[in-house]
Image 1 (cartoon, rainbow over the protein chains, first blue to last red):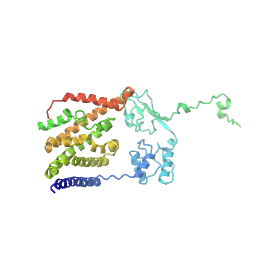
Image 2 (cartoon, chains in turn orange, yellow):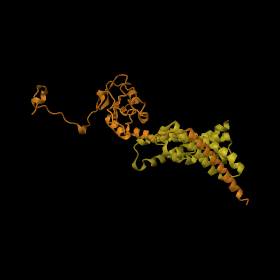
Image 3 (cartoon, each protein chain N blue to C red):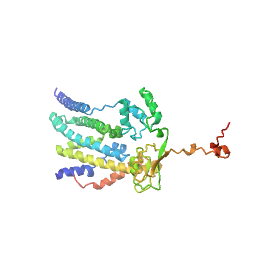
Image 4 (cartoon, rainbow over the protein chains, first blue to last red):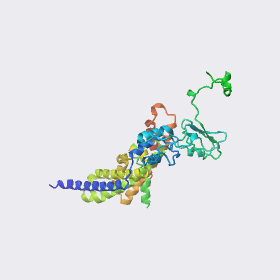
Length: 196
Length: 193
């Protein structure tokens, strides 16, 4: 029966090692417990991920956590009314009007760099949460309009105030030519002549 | 002290685990497309390598040798490495969720990174002491990190380069790894350890 001895010792040794390992992992599991709320992930998905901080939180994920904890759902200007409505549906709460400055509501703006004034300091590039500004040190920067979310975080860091927010330009394929003003009522609308 | 330094240089450069002994090629191809994830992977692997080489030494000298079951060491080391990787993953998930999501599947795959098992087995083959085992692990990890980060840097440039269609992607990466291995052959014979 002496051939049983190494088998027994082997089982003992491996049992010891796996037992120790399991014990260590159990301790670590309790020590490093992460509580991830599936609701927070769902809310985070609805937010626009601009990380602009206009809601008063340092990013979209912290705001998602705050919403899950009961904060108002209407503090995300980049997401607009659509996001508020979708969040209301997701959470079963009543929808609210977007909580933002009235003049910015419904205005889809983008950042615009006055390129003649840009000194190439790269400060706006670092501020941009969506990497929508291209350029290099001491070279002119410009904004990728398609990527810009209009969060205006780049306006404040600019030392020469060469960034302004403009209404989002209409893409070429949806551009509508201005009406030719050929008749008098088009040229003088203040004349009070209304078309029947 | 000189001995320990020589062990580090030997494991990191002369007998580099990735490019000279061709161990741990999976993360070299898998996590090398961006430098920052390569750096994260380097830190995770460094931690696991050092920890597991020490743990493997302890298991070898306090469990396997006294019970005369050294023939079970492959199995025992794999269990120890798996535990070390799980510990790393739990700690990383808590402390740096971003890095955790960047590394993704490659973090649990450190378990099957043959460089990690290779270090543990080579340590016992060469009858290294505890300190020597730890330094061998650190050296191997330094070599692995060096190659991984360098390779990621090269691949970031390759992504922008104009490469003929048949060589795009993994093909040019493997050719590049071959050239880097040729370069590391320059260290051959510098230290005999």
